[in-house]
Image (cartoon, rainbow, N blue to C red; front, side):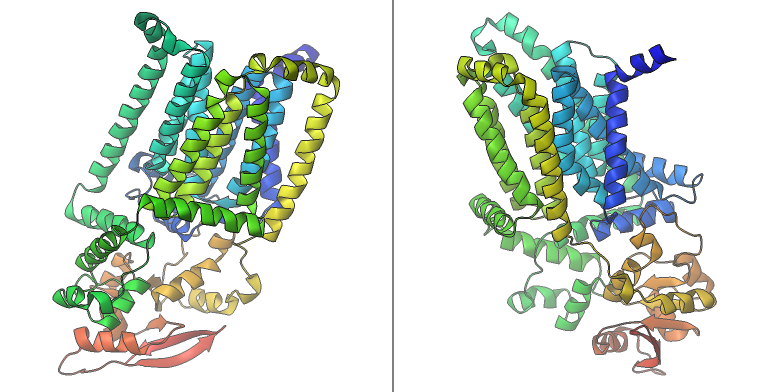
Length: 571
């Protein structure tokens, strides 16, 4: 038995999984563990609760697998649980790659260092883009390690699978990770002087990179295109796909000013009031606030964004970095430690290896600027660029390529190196926890939770409640499944609740004899509207498009108010 445990703890893969499992449990225990974006909650609701795998942001294959497994495990939200497990798998893979190259002591220290900077942020605030970023990073790192060892078996295959899963969560981030991988290849080529050798020998060095990178790129594109084909196989799914694609694009940039584009909106029949409803998330296929209106907004945004240059995005990157440093948040920690690390790399390494930090830093700046230019979104930029930069730079360290004077200094300090490293890691952990705690942005004030309203809605399953779109976000953010993302959805969750947005309980509406939520609100008994905002715009909208000779106008009649939420009937 003793020999078994000794053998087990000498296994790098087991140690990697065990260490990162402990870190994962610690991060979840000490953090708030919530959604980082409302989009992930919507995807979770769609895939895990309604078992609908057709989605524009998550690949169909992954969504289908998650929605199918969800039938078995009703008490756990598989969509969220999968991201936690994938995060653990990715960090374990990074640990394995580092320990395999540098040995246990250095590899574990490097791994804990990366976990402190990135794991708490990943496990505390669930976001598909972060899961994508860490999976892509781990996958390419395993591929680097397989090429270094010239063993293309299990771990190389695992790396390819991690890259594919990462692209399933966010296809766009694959190109950022691939760019960092190419930068590593170029820097490695320069450091080893491979560009000087004859072509046929150079191809023996270059061939593994070429084959693996080409294969994984082709496979990633093929599976992405398959997902798009499935999601657009009929008119209904195509409309759903286009809607989510458009709203995701539109959300990344400011809405166009109505007064400056009045003529364009008037041509498609949209008044200022209707435009305000469209901005709030209202959607009605039978009126001008439909897919065509969203396409118009998207085209106007593109016209406005043509005035923005990549230089503006670079300046935005610098200014946001300055704001982070001034407020000393988690991004500031990444910037400061990265600058220190690059400086040490340049000081200790020989000239041939200096291209690693130089090229990686250039790629870091370029990727941040380009992603801000193309997407203008926090989630697309910070996590993927920084974690790739850190991991690739750490993996590129070559202790045999240190300067002679530096080598002598390190040998003299070798006995205390591990102890000093451990103290630095502990200090970094404490500082990072304090910084994280002081900059919490997803904390939900449970004191404001409308508990009595939830009870009222659940007590009356015969009633049907339609939420204003902005009110719907507030309403669901206080729900148990939003506050506790890992908990599974009850079958009755939101069963008698709908909204004026895009997705609807069509089967429930059909049973009540209505073809839309708007018809249900004005013509069916026991249908109520929950709205915390000004209602006259909605009343004017209903009057304009749903009035008849019998009912020429509609009004929101206040029935009651519970926990600050106003419940109306439309008369």
